[in-house]
Image: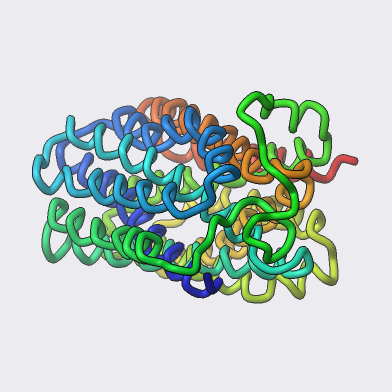
Amino acid sequence: MSLWVVLLMVVSNMIALKGSKIIITLFSIELGAPQIVIGVLVGLYSLFPMILAIYAGKLADRLGARWPMVFGSCGITFGLALPYLFPYTTTLYVQAAMVGAGHVFYNVAVQNMIGGIGTKADRTKNFSNFGLAMAAGSFFGPLLSGFAIDHAGHANAYLAIAAFPLITAIIMGTAKHLGQQRSGDGSDSEGKKGKSTGRSNPFELVVENRPLRRVMITGAVLLTGIDLFQFYMPIYGHYIGLSASEIGIVLGVFSAAAFVVRIWMPRIVARFGAEKVLVGSMFVAAVTYTAVPFVTDMVLLCVICFILGLGTGCGQPLSLSLIYDRAPSGRSGEAIGLRATLNNFTHIVTPLVFGAIGTAFGVVPVFLFNSVMLAGGGWIIKRK
């Protein structure tokens, strides 16, 4: 299958995922939920991914990408349709859990699929293009959702974005020349790295492989920072009086910056090296994060968020590329699944903790602590 078709599916599913997060946050506020409840809802996006990610990775290694992506995308669509049918706070809990569970099977499979396209020399470029597709979806998702909320209401906004994952399900379900792509090093669909076994212990990957462990920890910290921004930006925007459309624009600017930096990422990595670029992105994000809660002007907020997006934009594709390269033979899908497990563990804990902090002390301590956390992640990857 062409890489560009795969990237189209990435954009479609990312629109649904990122769009749903702004809708669930603003819908919860509309229904009168406190920040701690919103934190629980955001944490539920990561509960089943944390539990199922390693299994999803092993499944992708054994079966290929087709059916995990088909059923995962259908699960996302079904979950997003529920609040349209039952627009209550209790339904949002089910919606968040279902979208998270569907996304993990789709996401681990598509990442492993991209890692197996082309040769090892193509991998950084492929994951960079994957990052561009993620950024494009992250730009359009909040933007479309914000305008849909303002013009059609929260429930109808859910229905609108529920259609996007069906694009992936239809493409993967009807593709004739997909083959059984498994983790590999090259274009051979059967792979050249073998298969992971159901008896393997995935945590050996980080215990025995220090370079892999450092990348996984740093990647988890960076993605937690990104998710916390996308969680708290709607709350902060609502607090300073921005409309849903304006909040969507701010989040879209953040994602547009990630798109811009990922265009140049292969050249930057070729000049400075992947680890140095990852370290630099962590420290840029840490510095700009501190400025966000002190700005109330929308234009200035967009400028700061654009710089923040430049800093965080390299993190995900770089960490994925480094993890795929450093994974043992035949266990790339398992390593990506373990990465998702670690990421989602932090995604569960941090919204709950910071939701309680935000309820008690406001949003400023949340942004400042996240800045410290990002700086710590940069220090970890910098250590030899």
